[in-house]
Length: 292
Image (tube, rainbow, N blue to C red; front, side):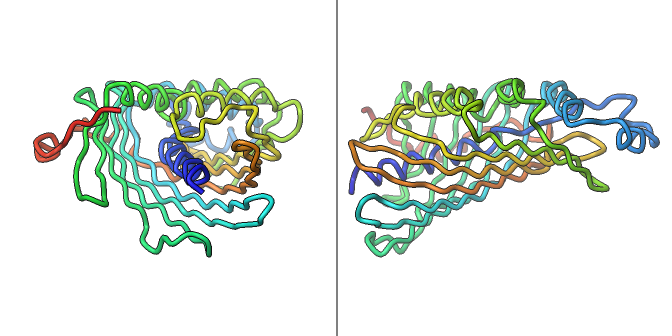
């Protein structure tokens, strides 16, 4: 059971830091500011062109706020034990310098796990270090420098740099399907099939490479059956309002299989409007430094 809980804990951490992973932010252009531009765009924009515009625009983002909701259904093999996990997270992030403040709540429901209370988490990461609140003892902890470096690398690869994440999807820009509403462009990518294997392997390797857990995982321990991206862009500004990712995969932990279905939704706001992240003085004063 402990190794499965390690996997679940890893999943929650990835979800939390993944809150910004596909945020696409636009640069404001003179064309986009003209009142007649949206009508012209409606007539001429293709999925590839919208994607390209988002790539160019993403380089302008300096900070954002992200609110995510994730539901995961996990089924153990061969005994059929089922676990439902819900993760809610709110994050403020700046890119230069790379810093964030995150609050999260994880709920786990299973007949085989006695866990009636949600797990609450809070983290600060700035140039001063990585600080985490330990709910069970109501204490702030300063994490080791190595863990901070891992978190910085993970944030940079998975969430803090939308331009890099968009670049990862660039090989498949012709596979995006574009829908339009009065207010939004909606890009959908069905990243299932052998042609997407390199993409999913790369993403898994980046994620797992930053995690140190009791039951270490490698890309070959995961088999992705389906991944679907839905990215909603504001039609006037090209800012990402929402990102949705649905996944189906199997995880092999020391010879035992877990089937996972995951549905994640992230809402973005307050682009380039986040004040510098600062760790409260009381946290710095109270935090106990730990070593691994």
